[in-house]
Length: 332
Picture 1: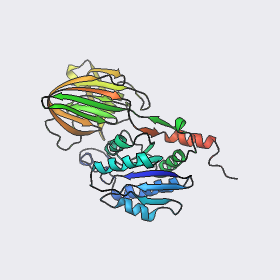
Picture 2: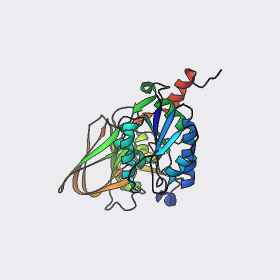
Picture 3: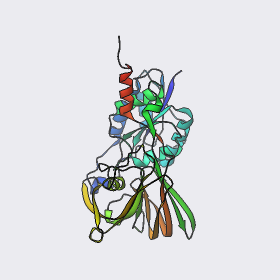
């Protein structure tokens, strides 16, 4: 019996203001299509694969259906297209029922939308967005091959995937309770408005909680990564509060946006278990998730904590390691 792989290509990923203010790379429609075509080629590493492609306003999905390898059965999902993140969530919800693996081309925001509705279907994420933490900067062919090997059961899912955490905020406000969740990071910012959405000024970061931390990551998880290392396959996360460097006894050097290294003051930080909150009192400000400002709040008390119900993620290196050791690629 064959396997089904879902493919999400976000045409809007990789086009925000950080291309003008920092050193972020550009990912246009042509590059996304070429990467997606490489994914389709990689899927031919396994036999009898059906591919379901998310439709989009830019018709990238339709072009992939028309130009895919003959070995693959490729079709568009039958769904309404609105041109926003709800498209991704609707597609992932269908994939949760019909797919054995999902390949996502996009940034942290796209992957967050997928994670909200993809259930326990393994994800292979290829970075085509801005300031990414969650998706990998890997070749599309390699990504497609990994998805094919996991989807068909050529490698054991238990040995080649892991559950990624998420971060959840519950805000108690004068107008009631507000909830919002992030995939890798959730920040509390001293901004009055959402504005350009991107976090460009690290001095506006009051604090945050992250589900993963490493110094090579950019933004909030990179700040935490300068304090400690927290792998994405471990439960819990890291919470911290920042302040002016001159007023803090501890500082941290971090890459805050592409092309920018800053020294930030740290008031406090601590490892957090799943569901262990760090509390912030916010007279007026903005909550960011995965590098983008999302929610304006006033007179709020916000509990932010790591949670364990994140997406299942494919460890691409582990997939190829197991497949090679099992002789999958050898032919006689």
